[in-house]
Length: 326
Image (cartoon, rainbow, N blue to C red; front, side, top):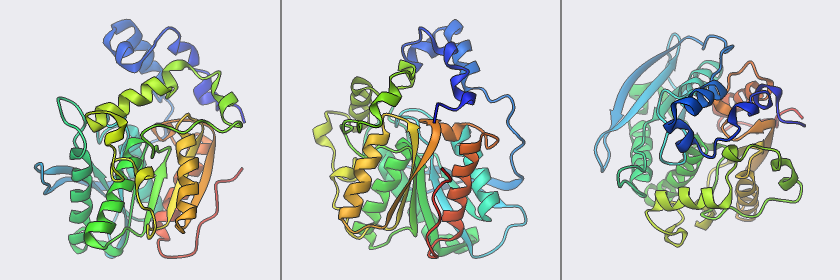
């Protein structure tokens, strides 16, 4: 289907802006970027309880934000959630983090723990963000009763760079602790240091997307090198899970954006998981671009994705969920 009109109707605001970094540096283009990203008609978020806390980690405390459904509870399912931002941007207040956590907590009746992992800026590189995530997951697992969480029903997930970090953390915990989350829930994520070529059906869809919204090879190369602190050849299987031994991984749900260069990475990775005998399901958010969880649930495909995510979290260890409606 075409790009959703809620997104396509704002493409004109991006004309002449080559990158987010350049656009944010100029007050005039910054106003246009802000308007493109703004959600003026978003419904009020659901009422959930939240508090800030921290998990101990090898690089210092890791800030987390804990969301609990109104009224609380005990032995609740849990989602540990990681925002995206190319490993160098993002925080707990961005919609992809905060709005998603509120929606999943309310819809699934679950505790959601948002992790404020260290970003790759000012000399920080892998494995620091990876170590932060592993530490935060261990903290949730080991203090589950205090959080009102059933320790057997902890799912782990993230969007974009956050999905990469979630997958790497699950692999590390499998190898180091002989422990896995109940499920991995990954939205528009990349798993390869170099993104595989787009499938013939995907490539034509991307031709009309503004350049600033694309993950072209030079953009992806810069992101990878900044994360790794060097060339792609440095990437082990925890940094880029496509390089890992995948056998024995927990069930994985991949939600891909229809119009996204990184979709090629997720599609290839799904095949790798299947060959390794991992229970993997792919669904497609039609009409959506990379980062669509920053949009509000009044937009149909966003609501459908959130509903699927909530069902995965609520039904961990139970029969598989249905795919997104076509």
